Image (cartoon, rainbow, N blue to C red):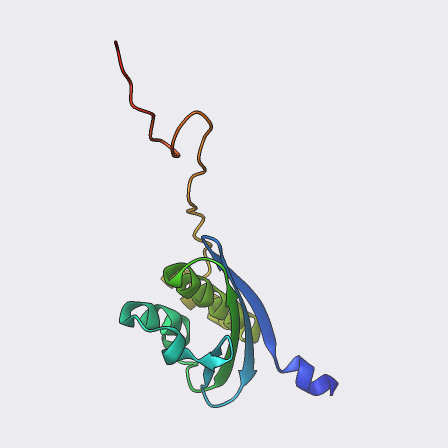
Length: 133
């Protein structure tokens, strides 16, 4: 039982308000997101390529099964969170991949968030209409 636990690599990825918990297990390359097939969950082609990017750049697509639980945010934020989570889990599985993943920018947390609404204004930067008279 302890041996099976050591063969799984767990990592967390975040983007905007999305959080993805990723589990890598040696296998055939099956990807499940929230207990559904990944291509059924991620429908936009550009986001599909974003999810697969860490596995393709390291040639590990057919060596690991990926199970992801992702919550919060929208489709784009979730795809970014999954991408970072897979990259971090791959780093735990094979530390020698750090240079490849870092060069692609897959380990860097994208810190851009929505700016908060301020009091006395209708939005973050927008002002109420000014009337001189």
